[in-house]
Image (cartoon, rainbow, N blue to C red; front, side, top):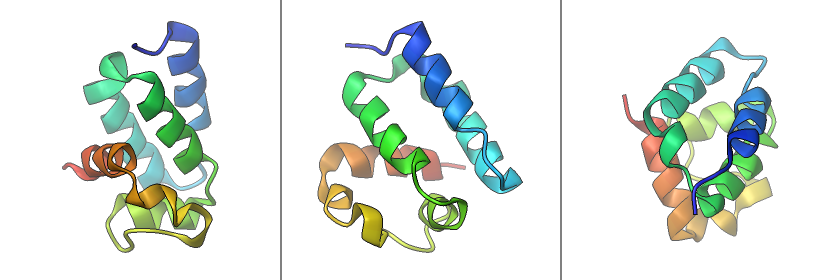
Length: 89
């Protein structure tokens, strides 16, 4: 099931970050995939957006494949799928 407009709006609002690089990557992601996101992918994004800016940046640019706060979640296929799409240029 796709995310509602309200859920998508909340995610986009939460995606406004302190680091411009994070903002640009997240904005590009929402432009490409925002309308297609399902509830599970929304949960993954919520988990990612709860991270500190530097940890999020490490994941988004591929400097790290996991962070301590999401060690277990990074093993899930939905998480890996969302992260892969976030990393697309």
